[in-house]
Amino acid sequence: MKYFIILLYPIFLSGLQALGQKEFKKSLSGISRVEIETETSVRIIKGTGSEIKISSGCTDCGNDGVKIRVNEKQKDEEDEKANGLKAIYPGGTDNTGIGMIQQQDGGVLKLRDLMSHLKREGLVITLPASVALYIDAGSLGHITVEDWNTELELKTIVGEIRLKKVTGPVTANSSTGNIEADFSALNQGAPISLMSSTGNIEVNLPANVKASIEMKSTMGGVYSNFDLVKQREDGLKPVSGHRAISGDINNGGVKISLKASTGNIYLRKK
Amino acid sequence: MKCNDVETLIIDHLENALSGEERDLVERHLRECPNCQSALEQSRQLLVMIGQLPREVPPETLRLSFETMLEAEKASTETKPGKLISFPWKPLLRVAAAAALLIAGVLYGSFQANRKTEERVSHLEQQYQEMVKERTLAMLDNRSASKRIQAVSYSEEMEQPDEKVLQAIINRLHHDENANVRLAAAEALWKFKDEELVKRALIHALDLETSPDVQIAIIEFLIGAREKRAVKPMQKLLNEPATPGFVKEQVRFGLTQI
Image (cartoon, rainbow over all chains, first blue to last red; front, side):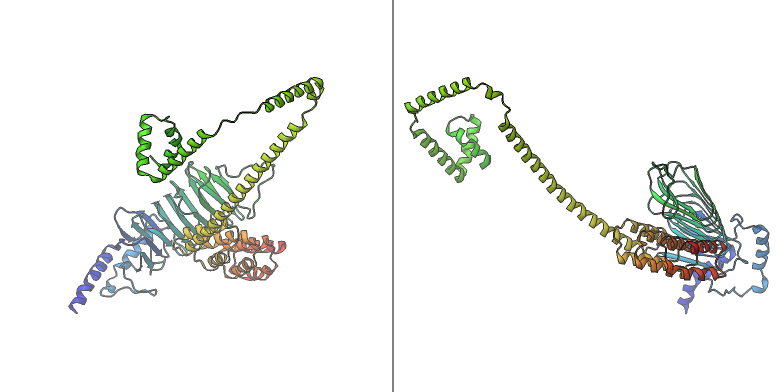
């Protein structure tokens, strides 16, 4: 029994600490991929240490009216009647102290949010850029990632996806949200695929990168200041099986696929 | 000094035509090498035999007949000077025959070389195709979505559709959790649109697919392949309340084209 308490103690303590600061920390040694599933907006910040730090509440995640509602929520958390009780959630048991459930499976750390988008006001996640990231921001959450050079796999439904100073590989998918991606360079290792059904896709690339681009918007327009479509020698319009626009930048390189259904695609040279 | 080098020097050695240094080397080798010793002995005997041969002296009759022949030849060229001007068919034919032989030889040689190169290229091509297949199959199960997309597009490098690879890509089209991967799979399968396996898989995918973008890609595929069997699932999609308007628009357009 004594041992059991000793064993439990650090978990209990870290839980308390996290509750106090509304922050979750965990070392990422031995972890190569972090998967986050939530219903709220997520902002990823590149950290310098080797741990993941998640703090609840984000004021610049793109959620409208966040600042007003954060105050209301803080009141709710300091509910005196809840003293001695712990919050329970329909989706599972909170083992992070911030209303998320964590589970490690080999080199993969999975974090699933137990709080609904009504309670949660965004997450700020700081972690080293050496891990691959998977983020599913549910129906309404936006995803913002800055300064990232390992793999990103991102999914939203209504929320927007904003990437700044990234290199890929990136796989991003949104149903109605816009996708903005500003690349600082291109990782030639694996392809980039950005897809939005009704949102716009906006990509900025440095002028000197090597890439093979394929763009298609079923009903929207495709705009670019890169010289992609080669004039055919016989003067006819180039046509391909999928009627996609494809072309090489600087003699070709990693594959970049931009696909929209009704939204527009903008490919800009920086 | 090796036996080969010594053999070339044996005659010179017997005729005392070697420099001092060479002779020392040859003699040192000869002392140790019985083979070369016997070669030396044979060469010596040969030289002795050649030396013993009586000198052949042409008999007087030969000189006489030669001079008669020379005179006759002289006389004939003097009497028929016109004949020399006539076109030299014989040497020309000889040159032509030589040239033909040469060309035939070159052609045969290059044909042989080509065949060998072709064999080697086709062997390399086969190895490459095998590599593409292995690489595709290995990467299709990767945890990284980007790698799975890469694997799917590797398959487009395949010349002959391998059923195992096609089935693995179809699996991605039907069951991958990532819509980008499913879209890439649908696009990669376009190259193999004439395969019955692929056509059936695309028709089935229309029933499974939930992402509007992938739905549109599948519809375009089936329109492009003029697949009549797709009409039924397309109509089903049209009657589905959850189907977005722009997908229904594509379906309506597709039904007029198919």
